[in-house]
Amino acid sequence: MNNLIKISDKGLVSAKELYLGLGLSRGEWSRWYPSNIEGNEFFKENTDWTRFVITPNRGGKPETDFAITIEFAKHIAMMARTEKSHEYRNYFIQCERKIKEQQKPTCIEDVLIQSLQEMKDMRLQIEEAKKQASEVKEEVQDIRNVITLNPQAAWRRECNRILNAIGRELGDYKTPKDQVYEALKIRGKCRPNVLVLNLKKRAAANGMAPSRVEKLNILDVLENEPRLKEIYISIVKEMAIKNGVRIREEAAI
Image (tube, one colour):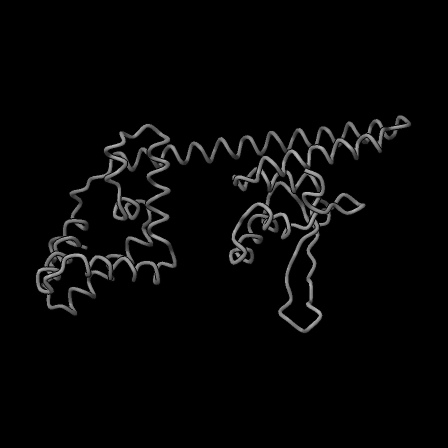
């Protein structure tokens, strides 16, 4: 537990070092920090975090990092929800205790300052709890929508008909589906297999029968992702035209 991450004399932590230590993707850092640090509604610039840029000695690409408070670092560790989250959180709690031991109030002014800080910490904890409760509520609602999906929806029937028709022409039903899957990954800038896996996990956690969970697929994901659904349908239409398969107008895909 000792020296899990460097903490400065002022009680500040490198956000990027923490991010990587939690096991989060190095390649996603530039997309992660704008919303999780700069756009975080509970922690403020120049109070809880400060941005700085590191320029490599040999003229490499400058890297953005943030000096964040231990309280903010503890928040990030828990919200990351990785295998390392609790280890880092407990480490920061221990560090906070040591700092408090070294900074015990010696006069009434210090007592008041400490009380105000504790009130702030409590307010932040309450706000975080509310936010987590709201996220759980939204996830539950998403699952309810999935449970009531109609697998016979017109767009799904027509997309499957087109892909099966192309498969018959090729003598291979798997290839057309693989092609639309790969095209969706590129155009939608997503990982369909991960989306399906996450959907199955949420469905199982919310009580969906295992037999139904196993049947969930990318089309079930698309029902709740209008942007990806539109891209998927567009790809299938293009494949239909390319392979001479007629699109049924009444299907309205």
